[in-house]
Length: 276
Ligand SMILES: NC(=O)c1ccc[n+]([C@@H]2O[C@H](COP(=O)([O-])OP(=O)(O)OC[C@H]3O[C@@H](n4cnc5c(N)ncnc54)[C@H](OP(=O)(O)O)[C@@H]3O)[C@@H](O)[C@H]2O)c1
Image (cartoon, rainbow, N blue to C red; front, side, top):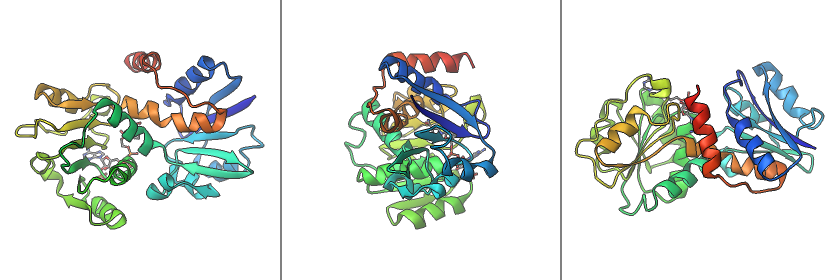
């Protein structure tokens, strides 16, 4: 029986088991997917002997994504671009690493807001952490000419501009609304709005009516940012679809079936989020 898991510290909050165990059941695969709580000092040893622990691979959550990247023998471009990995698998005795957040975000955006780049406008990114890096990489790969990054700590946004090159333009945090009005997509990658805490204070006045507003926070499912954008009639994209789609490549690597993100699976997660 093939086994995979999610590693983190803490890991109890992870919804990955819900997703992967749904797919194992749906496709009739005799496999298992569990949560493994691992302290930072235990990561290197655990990943070196993933096989001996009985796993074919794993997902990686906070705070182990950088350590997982460092431990891998083979790193896909998606992981190299963000120097962090959220998906690991064994192949030919080697540990492979990918960062599937890029795939998850871009796939969900494409499905939920088709034509998001029709008017070729700039993209606005709020935040400059790990998730921002993965998403910026996705927009660069998609051919976006200009990506404006606004972060509370400006130096972190500048570091992204250095890493990703001249298509990244850094703005002050205070300019995040005024300087995003002509954007084709605005994405919140900060943790503001998580658990209903904090506000980004953007009312979307004078925004291009074609602007798509995306929030990668998915608890609550409808964040204050998305609610405000909807009030102005803008198209919105929630964070749950990113979580669901980022799980697809890992499941395929471990269990050999490319799984489908269905309405039934989404509803399972929605009910879990509503239940706290
Ligand atoms: N939907 C999904 O599948 C998915 C995937 C990955 C992450 N996420 C969510 O995305 C969020 C960010 O994750 P991450 O891994 O990128 O975290 P991270 O690396 O810790 O980055 C956090 C970002 O939020 C900003 N921030 C935090 N508190 C702030 C505040 N009070 N005011 C202004 N900015 C603030 C930080 O700004 P500074 O640099 O100034 O500190 C930084 O840009 C989390 O809520 C996470 O759960 C969702």
